[in-house]
Image 1 (tube, rainbow, N blue to C red):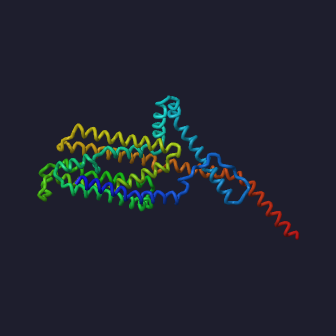
Image 2 (tube, rainbow, N blue to C red):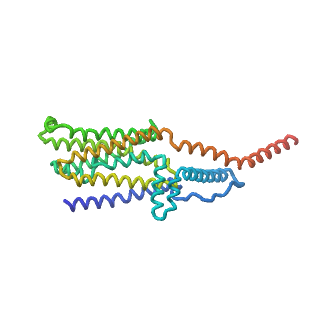
Image 3 (cartoon, one colour):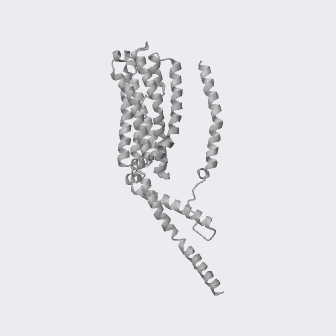
Length: 344
């Protein structure tokens, strides 16, 4: 059976390689800007046709916007700029300073707290389900269904963005994920006699196992919807020069919280202690939900991106002033030509 499973995984990976490469090629074909570097020293607006003037103006506007964001970012990060002078340790602290000063700090922290859980498909949950005699076929099937429900989350994400803002989608998704996981903690508060009332010829432990499987599987719809919202906000709200450091700090926090739960599982490794891991995991999810809610209340409805759009309009007007003399000259020439025609 191990050979069959390993062969299936190998064949599946080889078969998925072709569509993945095709999709990557299609993405770069439809968005050529992904494969081109932004000009660092664009030329000014010179004479030429209107298309070239517009293109040059847009390029200059993008560069001006990037410089303005860099200046604002540096002014908001005095601690990070001081840490850059420390050799070796400076860049590390500077990166965390960038993450701390970013607008997505609260959302990022709430997202990373979700990694401190065993209520997800993984070795710890699988080992517990196997210890309480849940059939392996059911465990494998629900793991597969979890992936399907995750795809459903990517489908419902777009309609949700039409009904509410992107931060609102993230807030609603993480609350729904928390609600779906609530029964996994509640069932351990019930006595074995109360769980036995469910019947079915199964033990109370097996009933708890099936409830966990159902909640974790179906709830992944909202987990993946929140993941998409958080990723999109990170890409849109963080400046280009800081996005890599913010994402790196976020990944570090995800690993740290995951290690916390794995370390706790080493201390409480008996199946009878599994409820402690469940309570801890649900506590992490609740904390992530609360942090995300606070971020939404104080930052989410008023993103820095709105100020960036306002700055963009001001920069456009300032850069467009350099083109106005040429426009006025063209209008004067046209007016002179009209006078000549009238004289004739």
